[in-house]
Image (cartoon, rainbow, N blue to C red; front, side):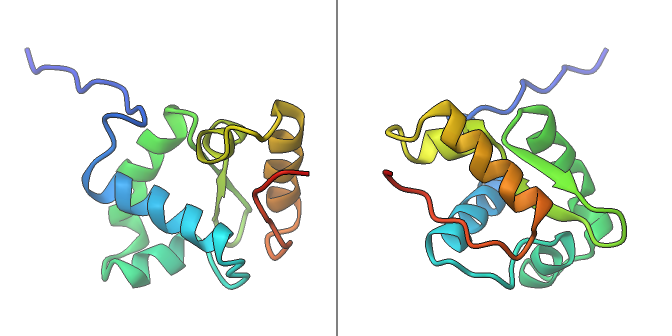
Length: 114
């Protein structure tokens, strides 16, 4: 029987999963409004969106990202990921920011203290 892979956590992130999370958080920090669709990540990593599917699913199952959108899939950080990045961020504010991005993909998201 094949060994089951351990669930992704911040400590076990490596390879493509770590690259995706780092790129996502850098885009937020730099206020890159033209970021974060699956196609954007595929282009940056010189691969196809289909090849990112497994990694994105693992990140989603770990509660680090959400995939939203119908025509164009957008990679959105979860409140859990935002709070990991900024420990001073309240749970409510992190959820508000996370939902704001998924509702408006080009919304300005700035992680920081109020």
